[in-house]
Image 1 (tube, rainbow, N blue to C red):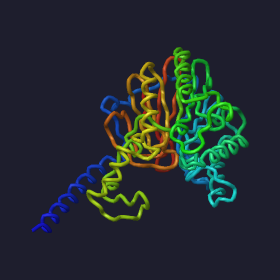
Image 2 (image 1 turned 120 degrees about the vertical axis):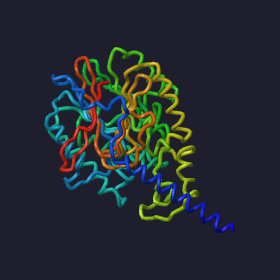
Image 3 (image 1 turned 135 degrees about the vertical axis):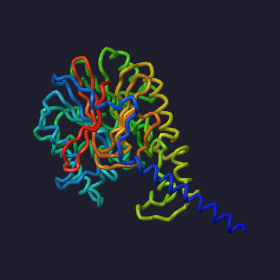
Image 4 (image 1 turned 135 degrees about the horizontal axis):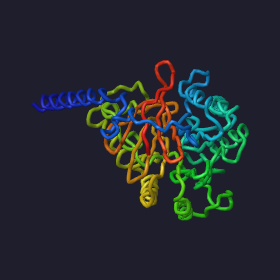
Length: 390
């Protein structure tokens, strides 16, 4: 009798999972638009050329190095018509799986190839380029990660000129400000510093201007307060809103087959018990998850600061998809689809989500700011999937 009841219970549970999977599959690879922006294609930016444009692209660390990469081709096409009043900002995780390892490491040659595939795009580029680091660039956040990010910074600086090509310098936490154009300010934050294990450089010994974490946030407040007359773009690696894995959102498959997180072929059904891993990531979290205490503390502090200001654009990568949130008068971007894609849940607080490769472009006009999302089409042509006036 007990065996029959257990059989019926697990059978019903599997049917429930199957139904949830079917519903999820209906929308998973389609772009999601909040009802308020369903008419986005009818809205047209000014006919005049933007006074400045910025590309926001993250998590490019797994790009194809043989010239076939669709996202790099799309970026190269954008660069062909970009003038000097433009900037490309890489939002971290520039090299998978662990940044640039020591010369004796078996991943070293592959790491250099991936970095060069990105750097070579800018040989004849008239604008500016800025790289910042993510958890994978710091050897996935491990205790020896500081040496890894220093190697990456040195590699980038040996190839591209300019003080601003890798920020903040020396793995410092920031904030670092860059005047992109009159009235347009870029602020770079090293959010990995807050969750990193091992050495976290700060103070005079590391040539970092801040001496403690309180000074970091105080400097950010000063920058925001003194530049309220400008349009401000904040670039970091870790998002503050996300409908994806690092925000605690998982697929039905990840609940039913949790071992696929370790290897994509481990399809061993574990209904019920398999949900323990997603639940852990949602409520306790690894260092790279929003639910982790250090990440949660950083997120809370930043949002408390930002709510005092309006029209800030905060751009991050980390989750491998494209997301846009408009919250409390500010704008939050997840642009981590430079070389991979992962599940992103529709709805919630999001205005737009899509599980697709691509990147964001911000076009600054004289009196308007427009956000666009570009994706590679079936034949690697550039497709504009969304735009909105901010």
